[in-house]
Amino acid sequence: MSTRTQRWYAPLYQLGKQWQLTLMLVPLVVLVLLFLYVPMGFLVIAFKDYNIGKGVWDSPWVGWGQFEKIFTYSDITRLIRNSLVISFLTLISGFAGPIVLALLFNEMRGGKFRKLVQTVSYLPHFFPWTIIAGMILMFFSIDGVVNGLLESWGSSRPVQFLTDHVHFIQLLVASNLWKEIGWGTIIYIAAIAGINPSLYEAAVVDGAGRYQRMRYVTIPGMRPAIGISLIFAAGSLMSVNFDQIYNLYNPQVYEWADVIDTYVVRAGVLQMQYSQTAAIGLFKGLVGLVLIVLSNWLVRRATDNEYSLF
Image (cartoon, rainbow, N blue to C red):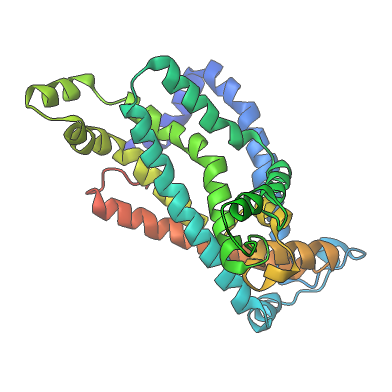
């Protein structure tokens, strides 16, 4: 058997040799193919003038026509601007926040108190945005709790948290950070747990204080997790949290809060423009792929090819 044939055959041989593990993997592979890859076939409607009555294959081909419509749409610049601004602010806060919180958790003393704080920080992740939106409306509306407190402290005018676009975007970023910061620390806490304790002991022997141990031991130990998180976060730069915005925005902040995802729902579901919204989704996916490749290249250059995904 040639060396080339051996290389081709080796993975199959390993799968057959460990057939129990391979058998356990089959349901997962089937689910991934069924729910992630099979639906991708319907992206073909992005190149068609899709008609429900005619079906996918009998609808006429229009080539790049749907993509030309996207870039001639009068509000596309506003939608891309809003998506990038909100996603960038959310990415920065959502990326840095869990790192800082994980470092603080690592420095906390008192096992029970630390576990209690960690558990409390995880809880908002499990609340759906419909509930959180209700809480935000209750707290930040004109006659809400926050404006009531500000008035009792001497404020003469209520703050338009939900109708002023600057306050509204700040509210989006802050509420997303509050909801996800605790959950986001899990991967970094796991990375910290994997650091060899002898490194801390050696640092103590060398006279390093808590700040020096954090800077020269903990943060370098978190670098692989930070690099991978950055790559995934960059890939979703064109995407925003649809549930969050859809449950919170209103016509008074449409100019700055209407994003690609909310437009896709309005045009695709309410106006039945399936082909155009599929073209937008495909465009977003391609931009996300480019961003992932670019961020992976940056991480590979910054870490000497040590912590990149590929």
